[in-house]
Length: 544
Image (cartoon, rainbow, N blue to C red; front, side, top):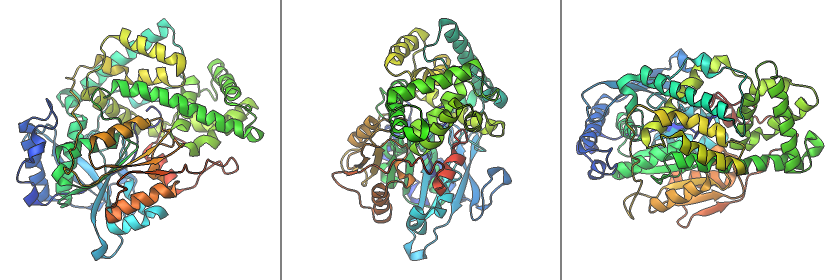
């Protein structure tokens, strides 16, 4: 979304042997509609054949990646434009930790994508250190990578990183006409900046090319079929991959699924997301009220909202530490909509501020200059992919009408969400037409969808839609929970289904429900789980 990668998660890939790549898959030629031409499909096959021959040479990771041993790194070449496979290529960075078990237990490579668009999965192999990933790490090489445009993979930028983290900023719940004019001007300037920086390459940062890149990566890794786990936005182009290359799918996990309905991509998905964040914001306030003896912010959700508005008014009048205004406050609180393990620290920051201690809020919400370049890059890729993928309203009157109405019932995130996406109204690159995600009975092996019922970033309706579109998929639902990313380890039930699927290929034919994971404990405000630390590294804008 904003402070967090909007549809965020992790990434790992598998490959194809040379013999499986010489022929263009029948389904690849037409599954993408207007976007996936026969020439592009042939370009994918040609690029994959070259990648299978070249492989990936892994060695010590460059210092710029900040990755510890035993991770090793390499690169894979992919065409910028799959319709011209012999033209310009770009290098995607790849990381790996080999399977830790015995050779006879190895099941291949597991590729993970953390979503975004714009998030890097280079850190993903570090999950081998996390206890509940141990058995999976014994069976699979864990593969991370940075998608095109991200990190050192032909990086995309749209503005000066220093401008990206400027502070303090405003964040009106019901913006004035003059404020809207300011944001329109900023959106136009941002769109021009993307076009100027990327030049003719700009249209090639899109979801279909992300799916095609997976096919080339699979080949480079030497895997005949792809075992892939995508989270959040990673579920969308993972589903595109399954549509384009069903015969090359081994196992696929979709964690926190984006709604793949072409009518939803991306304008309507964002409107639905704002509604879901309102619900999750209420969940947070209800939890805070339950622990009023700790936080003293109110005994019901409405009283907690009033306390929050006092903080908002305070930082609007005088930014905390000169850096935290309403915009920074909103971005920090958005993290509570993604992950409930942030609830104790966010609640404590609000409580301390009202008692006269601004330091916790300053620590959690101040911009981080050291992460400015990484954050700006993530935002640029997010914008380019979503703007390139689909048509957007080009008349601000449409945005104004829809978001003004929505903000009356979902004020928490509606307008901030709109401002994040508004450059798409003024995008100069050609707009795509979303591909139709679909798999008929028997076309795919069983696939696994994991979803939290109250997820805000990817509302539950998206998991239901993906389940309907991928015949033979199994849907596992964490009921009455909303943390974005079910496989974080907090829910043993969901973890068991994930393990059974990845290790044994078993998915519950009729789906399954899991009880919610335990709510956070105010007495333990800073979670120490290793996966939480990885999440912070994957999403540098979020802090506990």
